[in-house]
Length: 88
Image 1 (cartoon, rainbow, N blue to C red):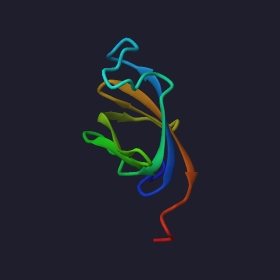
Image 2 (cartoon, one colour):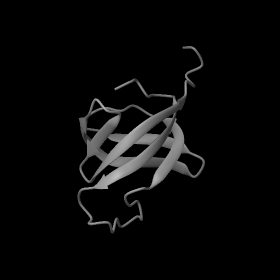
Image 3 (cartoon, rainbow, N blue to C red):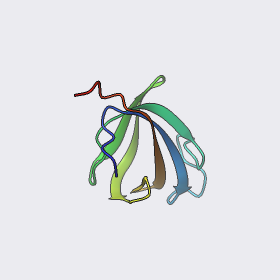
Image 4 (cartoon, rainbow, N blue to C red):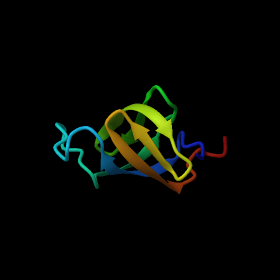
C-alpha cells in the first residue's frame, strides 16, 4: 500500500467484524472520515487528524494490496485525496 503518512485521505469502514453493526462509538459500516493520515503499520492503531479531532482505529492486523486494511474489529478502505507531504 502507498505510504499514507501526512497525506489527506478518506477512510471508509467497509466491514464490521466484531460488533454486528452496533459499534459502541457509532462507527458502523459505511462510516467515513477525511483527514491527514498517520502511519499505517501492523500491530499499531491507525490515526488520522480530522476536522472533528483525532480519530483512530483499533490495532491494524493486516494491510492488503487493494487499499484496504484489517483491524481487530473492522475492515477499512483508504482513498488518497491529495499528496500533502509538502514535497519532503
